[in-house]
Image (cartoon, rainbow, N blue to C red; front, side, top):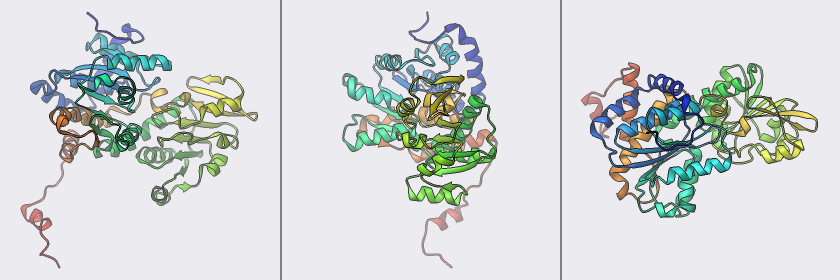
Length: 420
C-alpha cells in the first residue's frame, strides 16, 4: 500500500532510486551513522516532520532517520528545489510520505507544509524555518508534543535568532548551519560549486573574462567568489560589514558598493539572506544583457516586483530557467525566477559535502531526543564533540590520517609555568 503523498509522478521512482543510491556512495559518514541507528534505534517512536530540499542527498538522510526508528514525513523547502524522481522514489521505494512537486505554486507549497505538520511532529527539521514559522503563527496546538527542532541554513538561523530575541520561540532549535562541519564545507565548497553549476547549465555562458558581482562575503559568498575566480571571472564583492569587506580585499577581490558594481557587472549573484540586495535603482544602470542569479534561500534578494514594473509586462522565457526582462529597452536576464539557482537549474550541492551536513542533522535529532526536554527555547549550536566526530569520520572515509598529541605535548599545552 502506497503511503500518503503528493508528488508529480510515481512512475519516476526507479530513476530516482538509482540516483539516490549513486549519491549514497559519496556519503560514507551518513552511512556509518545509519548502521549505528539501525542497531540502536535511537529515534524509535519519534515523529519527524522535515521541510528540506527534496534531493538525492536528502533522501539518504530520510532513510537514515527511518531506519533509526523515526516516523518521517517530508515536504519541500522551496518551490523549485524538488527532484521529482527522488520524491517519487521516497514514496514508492522507501514508504516515506512526501509532499513536493517541482514548480509548485505558493498555495500548494504551504498546503504541503500543512500536510507535513498534520503529522504532529516531536521534532521539526527545517531549511529556512518555514515549519517553525507556520507552527508559531498558525499551529500552536502542535507545541505540546514538540521536543525541539533542527535548522539547516543561514537564512533560517537568522529568522530563528530573531524569534529567540523577541522571546517568541517556543521550543529549542539546533542551528546545524553553525556547525563547523556544515558551514565551512557545505556553505563554502558546496554553494560555490553548485551555484556556478546552476548558472552555467541555465545559460551556457563562458565565465572567463566576465565581471561577476557577488553580493555578500559570508561563507556561501566566499565559495561563490572563489569558484567564479577559478573559472577566470573578474570578481567584485559588495558588503555591508567592514571586516568581511576587508577580508575580500585581502583575498584579491575588488570591493565596492552595489550602486557602483551595478554599472560594471556582467553577472550578479546574491547570497546574503536579506531582501532587495539588488534593487530597482541598480537595475536601471545595468549593462545590456546583465544576468541576475540568487543563491540565498528566499527569492527576495533580487527585487523581482521592481523588475516586473520596469519591464511593463510579463518576461520572455528565452531558455529553461532564463527570463528576459526589458529595462529602458535593454535586456536583463533573471535566472530560476530568482530562487536558489543551484537547485532551480541544477542538482544542488554534491553528495560528498552534504554527507557532513546531513550527519549533523541526524545527530542533531538524536541530541534533541536526549536533551530537548531540559533545554530552554533558544537556538543552540551542536556540541563540539559531535562536530569533531563528524570530521573524524569524514577523514577516515577519505583515508586521511592525522597526528595526535603525545602525553608530553598535552601536558605542555595544559600548563603555564614552562616558557623560554
